[in-house]
Length: 195
Image (tube, rainbow, N blue to C red):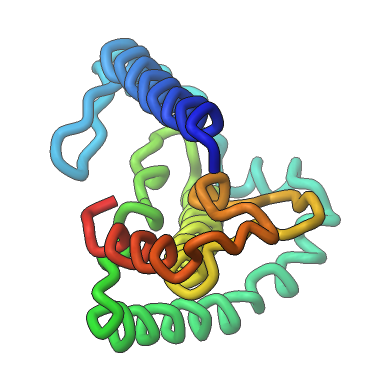
């Protein structure tokens, strides 16, 4: 990777961090404050949320029937999701210490906070919890796989690929064999640092 590309990637990382910080600052003062794992809304916002809450029977009557019909299919996916969770967590716990790779913190990816929203009824909160688990688990697993790929084969593909992980941009160019073993070792050593 040439210096210009490395410099642009560093700028992108810095801008993404600035954007995350700005969005966090904007959210933090407007509607709620985060105190530990608890989200606290201003009293007026909390009362407005409670007024917007749909009761179970009203929700059931107005809910889209196709969602009710496909519900069993969606919720049956909990079995492969839990199996994936167990497998990637076991893999990481068993292999990452051997490789010297920093562990991926599950809690950074699987976040359950939507149940604190007072405008959701208990069914909607259940849906949100399920989705938070599924989407968070996929992101958690993707980061474990990304660190594994960086450890074993940090080489870009010849063809353009959609949906690459954040680490991919820094991988070695396809066909760039110059000093491969040394650069591979640099990637591996870098994975031991907190990321």
